[in-house]
Image 1 (tube, rainbow, N blue to C red):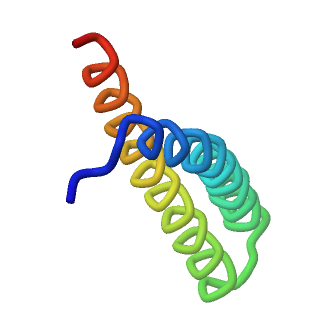
Image 2: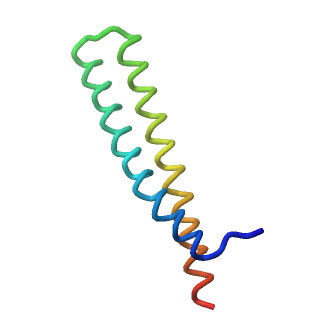
Image 3: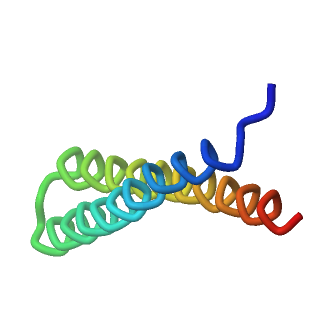
Length: 80
C-alpha cells in the first residue's frame, strides 16, 4: 500500500534535518582527520577518523535524498 501524502510529509520532516546534521557532522569529522594527518598523527588514527567522516557524509546524503523524494511525492499528490 502506497503512503499517503501526509505520511510522505511526516517522513520528510523527520529525515531532512537528520540528513543535514549527518552531512555537517561528517564534514567536520573528515576535516578534523585531515588536520590530524597534517600534524603527523599515526596513519591508523587519521584514516579511521576520515573513513568515519565519509560514512557520516554518505549516510546524510542518503537520508536527505530520501527526504527530498518524499517531499516530491507529497507535492505531486497535493497538486492533483
